[in-house]
Length: 631
Image (cartoon, rainbow, N blue to C red; front, top):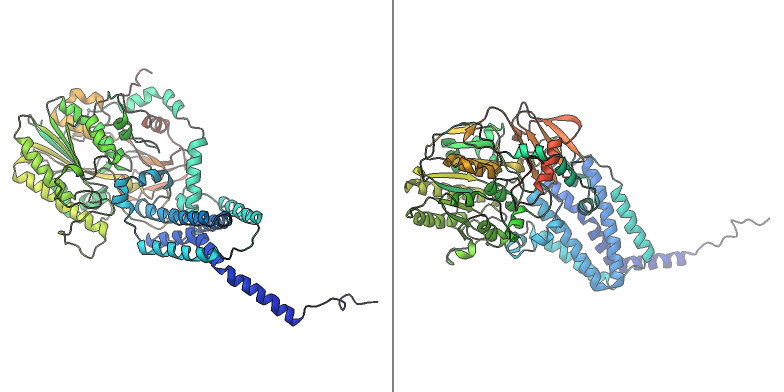
């Protein structure tokens, strides 16, 4: 019998060597393409590792889920890029650069906002004012340029030697990568970016809002009286000041993006440490009336300034801000603070350091009753411009000239200012030389601290503090980075709603108030202080010039992190995702709101009926005053 093994024809050494050389040659010719795909595929994972390292996070199991999701998404993207190169070399290059741009954009957005949800703001980011102010100022420009150059170089070689992988196989690889990314575990109590890739999160974000059944109309219709009761202005507290003298002026200052955690006395009241970035403003806080638990309702300037000037909740969900709705509306029936004061004979002026058209703030300010509005383009051309406009000190100098002129008229005045030096990439003039070795954002806060201190001192030297109520606050709050091991993901970012209020009154009241107040309280408080209580019905909230025995419920949100928060003062905090489908509760009975010492309550929480109702109310049109009572 013939041995079948013996009859096998084994390849000769020469044929094996020839095959190996051919394989090596094929690999050698294809290595640029493979390297380009390797770079494209690993980009998301590299961005994640860079973020984790820079922000001081401990890499844990949830990051492992996210890393696997990055790999799956990267494989899918690389396979799709190969298909694009097959169709057209130009198309492949364009899509490759777009993929690089998306990863770089995600990194820059996360660096500023610690949020993965950036694609919805792509149109906003292309606004000329934003591009000039922040868009062209990359955190790591050399690293971004190097990645782009490497990809272009490899892609150029890859275009000459395209690996012969069947199109069906590439499509299968892309589908497998996408499926692998989608199958990773998920926990509602962990920050989404740590568990998923930014692509899947942004796609899911858009898809959820497009197809998820929403109960806003039902929540609004079923809770009209509940909403009406919540929105009623509350002036039941005991006044903490004697009546204001007639014709008292009002100055309101918004310092861009500064949280209360940068004022040491307010941070101490919240049982936390602070970067002593603003000791001069903190001195004004200690010597006057200050509020340590002052809650900003939302991220983004147009939402915060709307709440502060119109005494209303901003939109607590993603969507067109109410400021833009007002600016674009032909009809306007609702009364905001500038118009209310104008009705009592006040001259009013709004000054902001940036371009007037950005966020439509010029049209908004005029719609709500400001008689005059000055922006960057209206100031002396000789004043140096930073990334966003004139710096804080220049804005205050311009305001002093306007105040001097207004003081000689026979009417009181209401002047509002909005600064920009503390907005990325931070407009610090060359003349400011302090803290040369500090980070740019810290130097910006130090400059803003000196500038506002100089402005308040100049008002005092003119005698203006004797007849002027001065309020210093922020439009929104950036995060105070105080990460702790094991901190619940829902709690990270809560300080992005930690504002502050410093009130310099003609009575020189020296008091720190720890009870919770909110941005929307500002109009009611100003009118209460001036004795114009008859206008209270146009606004919501409480007056922070009164003392209240009982706590209250305050709502805030974070449009970047897709969170909505319900704070029941002295009892508890509930944080939910924007759809209210995933919530977590915290016990705040033993610790201040922003201390991060609040204890998480075991198990998932449920949104209250009022929380659902207020979420629904917040997206209603701001054009007309709300009428819910009796409904």
